[in-house]
Length: 467
Ligand code: AMP
Ligand code: MG
Image 1 (cartoon, rainbow, N blue to C red):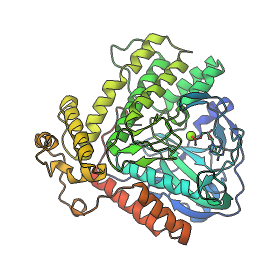
Image 2 (image 1 turned 90 degrees about the vertical axis):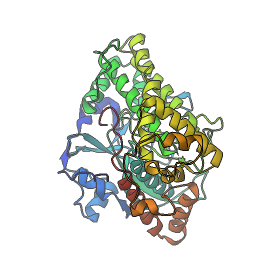
Image 3 (image 1 turned 180 degrees about the vertical axis):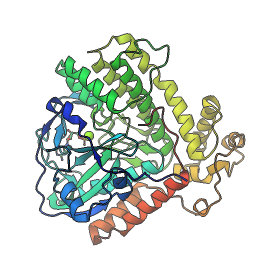
Image 4 (image 1 turned 90 degrees about the horizontal axis):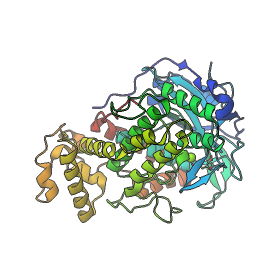
């Protein structure tokens, strides 16, 4: 069984202050006509010392954005650029969000509270700065399911419905509005570095590297890595390690993020910013989540490649501080790290003991063939074969029989007919109940089922460092 997040005292630590002058712009939050608390994540609120807030105090902080004690005096809309579908866009930044607060958890790790849908900023362009309620509900579902499946993800901390009518070209409109607060280990993106390169800000680049190394302590580069004492090189190694693990964790989860632009790539290695995501209905590397991804650039099977490409853009930015050779050496590690992570995460989800990356890769390939031939949803496949059970007569079954089980699958959870999943039809059903009858029970039931899945899957394999 997986342990729950540990309760901790509130320990504010607005470290962003040290770089606030050039990493963001102070902004006001929007004044909303209504505040209806729809979701509070008490599991994680306790971990940052905010679990005891009354609903009124919660709404004051996460709906009206009254500052938390000893924290940021004003929200900060972060500055960044980014490659969007591989075209460079310097006209972005936090256009509907901001960094609201920072605090330490019980292990001393720094966490941020950031927003989505909290109003216009200098980076909003033509946008309204708002988030649809449906978008917020979708982000709750994505983050809860990813967390259950062991993915290093931001958490949805709070959702408050805000009583506005929004118009969206790609949704039935008008539609309801919400403001979401997310909890994650930072909001510094690859695009934050790209912006500093575009402005030739060498000193700020060095300061941002130092901030990241200090805030997210990670491992050291391998002993034979060139330039292994240089901060920029160390950071790139850490980001390559984290994003290789993240890519593998999405693949083992059967998850398609949909928009892997460099402004959506957190240096902490957490996945975040969930828009048109989907879970695979069946194993298909070409499956694409975003209807506007015409070329399938961010299709399911191309996610590792997309993350490596994004690491490449971080390397390009870090050229301002370091030579090419040590940066390329860091990028060159991605493939092997990805293969290791895939072995670790795939066997974890199957509930069997890894037999090393090479043997596990054969198992993974056989599993992919089996799922492709049967058309079975990944959720059902992993559930059916949990702890090595139901090894059939095909190639996958033969390989699976060679594996030792890492856990048992004999509790009631593993005997149910339908494994918990979150395919698009179910997302739409949950949303329809809210939209048509203001009935939130299906969402809450689903979140409980997903958390039960997480507990039963147990402690996920940790990436190289603890972020
Ligand atoms: P995203 O695709 O959500 O990662 O956003 C890309 C860029 O567009 C970021 O700069 C966002 O802040 C901005 N953006 C997206 N939606 C809106 C909106 N409704 N209002 C203002 N800015 C937005
Ligand atoms: Mg984004």
